[in-house]
Image (cartoon, rainbow, N blue to C red; front, side):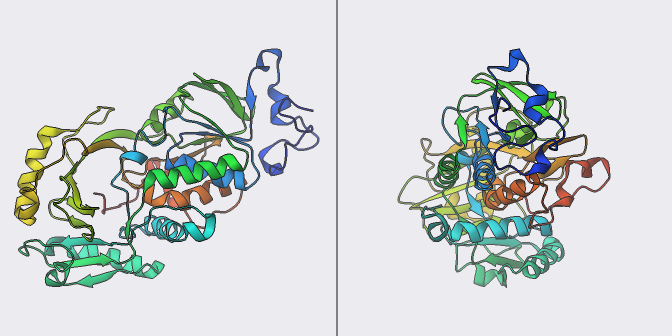
Length: 416
């Protein structure tokens, strides 16, 4: 028996492709030494317990793998997932992003049927207000979305104003995704986590990773909650993904960037307002209960783990809102319920997903650039396929890390 409890050359019911053959020592035997007696062994270590990590842990444990999740926070979703605008949409320009979101939305819609749990999915749509200069590229995106099977409507500016009041000037066309909307990210994250734990996964909170060492055909992760070894690592560390990879000597170009979202006081909003994006200014808003949440991304925000709401930026956001949504600029902001969080940005605004050529036992599931909540359900299934040396149900080869060195970066345009 090896230290992990498996026979030589195998471990529990994990796929044989993960480990050495019957004629060779298994991963656990190959690294076993007296000084590893305190190391905890599993099939996969998922670093990051946000919604991406939780969805991966669920699908990996569902596949029969023994999963260890290491999360740096004391509570779930402290970095991005729980501080998200929580929108889910199919309106992307790149086909792979459309597919990831469309498959995820359909799972969120069916959460009660599939799992007896709630995702908090609210079908109130996404509305893009598009100027003429941007329409040709946006129309190409609509064709991609429809080809995938996602429902997207093209409407006039006057028709769009039936969903939310705005000034019509400068808007050429609008697109509306009737099955877009939002979910409750913490409700969904907790559901995935609970389902993973129910299938044998282990979760360690406040587990700050301090070093990662390649050992034989696998990895040892050193953390504030102990040391862990496995043949596979899933890097689902969100805003910290680049830093976590660096602990293993790997270069994964994911950088944290703060985003602030402002919320009006109760009694001012309409819950039916869809998430509405003014493409020209990049301002977005949506109804939330009887309030409105809204923001504009700050192009001057430096990368880094800066904390707290950017209150000075609100002045600019109000000025932008006045040109399109004058009623919004007049609403009082609730400083207690406005919030901030991190985008995990990549150079091209699309995620990094898949095994690394230079480190095959390392699977990246990071860099979602603000879209992790809306793509997590599909990503969990894809990562589980990679872990079992299977072809994923969506072709995500264009999202491999190596694209950046091959001049094959994506050109995702719909980032808000």
